[in-house]
Image 1: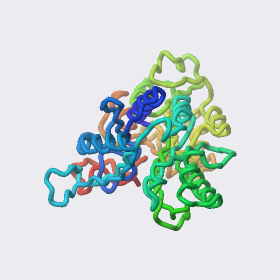
Image 2: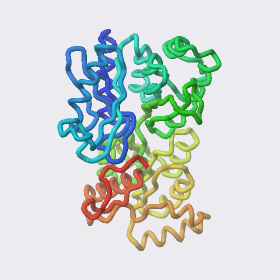
Image 3: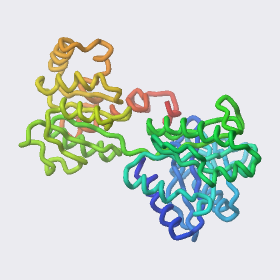
Image 4: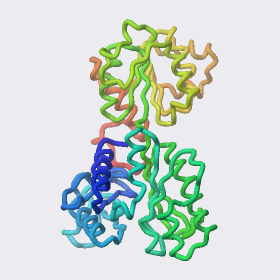
Length: 394
């Protein structure tokens, strides 16, 4: 979850706890090029103050008015803002040529009774998702929310969602179907740290149409494990922490692995890299967003930890070293039993070709490769590409 989203949530929770009624506009889906991702929100406070952003300025004024009206009337709205204004030069739109769907709704202790527990989870770093019905044939159901957590044993509908569906004439089994569908799908998105719009039939039928639900995932920050307590590691920890990762620096040498050398790291661990990685994998502290960066370029550390890392379902594995080091490392990894398909996952030498030499420049190169790998982008210069800058989520 980005810093801006957390800032919006903190402000929203403060107004909620004070008993205020506010309006919130949230990007629930993007089409083509867009400056913000699903989940970006703008909140209009009780006295007209504003926090957050949905487009970086393109449609802020329009979303402000939409959210303000939703707060005043209690009537939610789903509006698409796009590059095409239908002939009206003054209509709000995105200069990047794409489009985004914004859902505006009223937020208060009455309309969102579970916000306090959601905020407690967010502050504690516990994963939680909020599923909001943004489109439905029955307007009474639009805006209802379901809070979903991992391994939640009781799948009963929250009272607010249950009551509204009951008012719409649904029976208990239909309510259960909606709850089961939303819970299962929201958990899948939460595990991946993704926010997304999902489509169902009016009663939760997976192959149907008519009900549109936005699932916003508030997952803990993705992790980066840096093995090798060297000066390059300090630079990598700084820039990757800035990108929102929770960085751990690990090295078997206590003389080098000290917290004062890595102030930007969330933790500094003294342990053999492969042993620490094995422990983290066994305790479930790694996921599909985790990135691993091996900077030691010493075979006694590199080979054991890479042999394990390349067999884990993590997002990225990179290793520092020269071309000669890379060739030697591949031979050692093959001798350790790794297959070509596993070796193909290794980014080595680590980073993009930026010509950097200093630790800071090298860190930028590594961070850029991680971003490109995460998004599926080419890493080429934008001026040399003939495609939208902000591509749809891959």
